[in-house]
Image 1 (cartoon, rainbow, N blue to C red):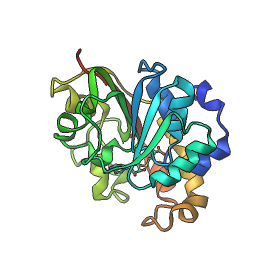
Image 2 (tube, rainbow, N blue to C red):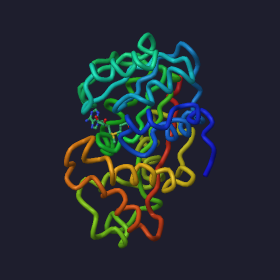
Image 3 (cartoon, protein in one colour):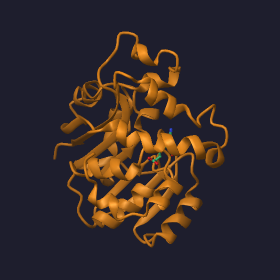
Image 4 (cartoon, rainbow, N blue to C red):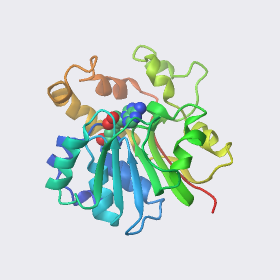
Length: 249
Ligand SMILES: C[S@@+](CC[C@H](N)C(=O)[O-])C[C@H]1O[C@@H](n2cnc3c(N)ncnc32)[C@H](O)[C@@H]1O
């Protein structure tokens, strides 16, 4: 698998204590390779979960981060940011993706790691909300779970037994590209399947078998779901997709 030298600096047990999906630091490092983040920039980390990507952004790029999440409380995240020594650069907020408290054009960049598919897979979210968060010339980036290509039924045959309606937000990178590009509101600067996506996903799936229920309670059979899902995907149709874009000046 590809090296992630920035992520290597972080304690694996701290990552595993706080991750909520496939290693978010690997995903953030991959994505940020296609963004130009500079010290002092204001960055929205949308759907930051327990905020480890927010810590990563502050430490690696010196940016000021607004760590926005719904399921995780801002107070819990503040404690984590204090412990990580970045509370002066990372501001925790609790807000739903459709009722955000930010001024239009406030951010230099807005990213969303492993969450945009929960609210952004509809036609209106990008033009009505996400694109408006960043200033002219501002940058946007997402990583989402998805599919290598579109399927007539919406899913590959191999996953028929495990598929459930919420997974219809899984799409191909071409589909995501079109969703943003057709609005004419941005220029796509990268859009790709992350190398070795399933190898990135597998450690989280393995961890979940042992720890998901302990950490998150019964998430509707969530404990070994990812492991069964990845194993059933014998044609390797499941991927992690990254996309970055820039708003015109
Ligand atoms: C799979 S977790 C990923 C969290 C984090 N980015 C990570 O990779 O560890 C998805 C996150 O999306 C957030 N989320 C889901 N729906 C949301 C919504 N409608 N508004 C804001 N955040 C949302 C949840 O609060 C959750 O923390």
